[in-house]
Each structure stands twice: as structure tokens, then as C-alpha cells.
Image (cartoon, rainbow, N blue to C red; front, side, top):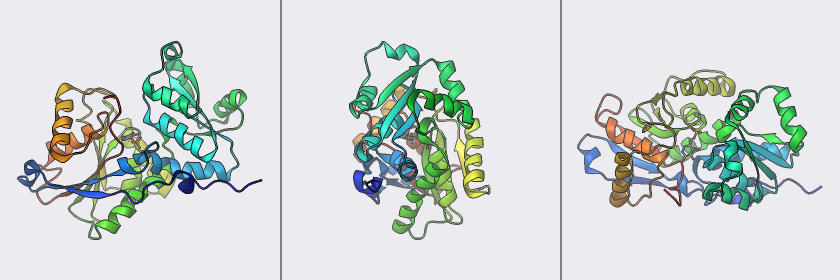
Length: 315
Ligand SMILES: *Cc1c(COP(=O)(O)O)cnc(C)c1O
């Protein structure tokens, strides 16, 4: 048997991701400094936090001799596309279970078409079955059900978040500390929160005094606080008090992009040359601008905004 492929060799991510300073009068006036951690540039097909979170899981899947990855996501899931591309690169088959059985008969959107283009097998499940299965992933019975249909597979939950993924996200902070060795009190590292894996890793890795601020992109998603705490408990055997989640900048819910938010993103692009991804990154940046100079980001704060992914080809 040939030795397992090294995902970091097969995919050749661009690491460390660049760190860039942003000069913006609106923030300077309120005493806040902004830096962008450009994780969107890590890999063209497995960008941003998707590389960070998948890397340890790809390695585990290969080390355990798996031939296939199986995961879950919505119709435009960045995670589904990233798994499809990563699997193809390291020689693992991929299955994507997609929320919504009505999509089976519809024309493939650009995101699912891309996933299929990488060789991913798609299955479309109604919402109840999808939800039930995700809820039961910790039960051997649920995994057995999946394996009856697809054979032995390495199962990744929706969004790819598990303890290994959160550990992968700690590398964002390791790189940041190399660029800003004085990272500490006054520093706030911000990221968008879909499932909380990225935030959990960042918070766990921050040096003393630095804080993490996650911006929930899902409406009313208080369970995310519990998710992050649970990842810390399972992965680090402790809690961390250096993070919080903002629940006021979801823009109306997952996938919703109000006109005002789109305008903010366009303005940011015009001023700073970053094509702003709308479903996650725009909401996180909007939150930073809203909170700058206030109690949460007081004057003197140095904010590092983690750009967790590139703009969609179709906004
Ligand atoms: C998946 C994704 C996130 C969410 O990350 P979590 O670890 O699930 O919280 C944030 N930003 C972008 C661009 C993403 O694709």
C-alpha cells in the first residue's frame, strides 16, 4: 500500500496567510486600529477557515485508512464545496448530504455544480431527516445507517466543526502571534460564527489578555455559545472567559443580506480593495464598525478581523 497523501502537500495552501493593516478614518476617529487576517487567500478551492478546519480531519481520515468523506450542508454550503475539492486533491471519495429534497429535481446551483465537478456524490434529504441525522451523529446507530448506504466513511458534521477542526483553527492565532508578537490586552480577534468551530479555536489559542469576538450570522442562535463552550470542554478540558458572541449583526438570518449590508460591503471594497464575502464576512466587519469606540471595542483596541472566506462568484 502506498503511504497516505499529506494534505498540506497535495493542496499546497498559502501559509501563513497575509496580515494587512487597514486605514479607515471612521475607525481612527474612534481610536480603533483594524487589521485583516487574509485567510480568504489560503487556497482557491479550500479557502479560509475551511482549510484550517479540514486539514486535521483530512489527516485523521487518511491515517485511519478511510477512502471516503461524508458530510452535510445547505444548498450553497462553502463547507460542502471545500470538502469536495479537498477530497479530490487527496484521493478521498466524497458524499455531500444536502438539506432540501426539492433540490434533487432543480437545476444545480453554481455551488453544488462545483461540488459535483470535483466528483462529490450528492444526496438530497428532506429537512426533517437531515436534522434528525445531524442530531444523532454521536449515536453509532446513525453512523451505521449512513454506512449501510455509502460504506465505511469519515463523517464530518455540518460546517465541518468538531474538536479537530477547532484545533486546526488555533493556527490562525499562531500565525497572528508571529506577526504581532505583542498580541495581548487591547487586542480583539473577530470572526464570523456559523457553527462556532473557528471561534472556539481562536479563543483557546489567544495569549493572556487578548479577546475573541464572534459575530453570529444565524438569527437567535444562542445555542452557539453552548457549542463553543462544549468544544472547549471536549478539546481542552476547560472553559475560557476571553470570548463572546455578538447576536445583533445576523442581518435578519442565515443567508440574508439586507440592502444596507450589501451597500456597506461595496463601500468597504471600494475603499480597501477587499471583495467582501456577504453571508459571513460582511456581517462580521459591519459589527466591528458598529461597535468601534464603544464599550465592546473601546478606544485603543487593535482589532484583527479574520477574513474567513472569499466573495462568492455570484453575490
Ligand atoms: C464556514 C464559514 C464560516 C463559519 O465558520 P464556523 O467555524 O462554522 O463558525 C465563516 N466564514 C466563512 C466565509 C465560512 O465559509
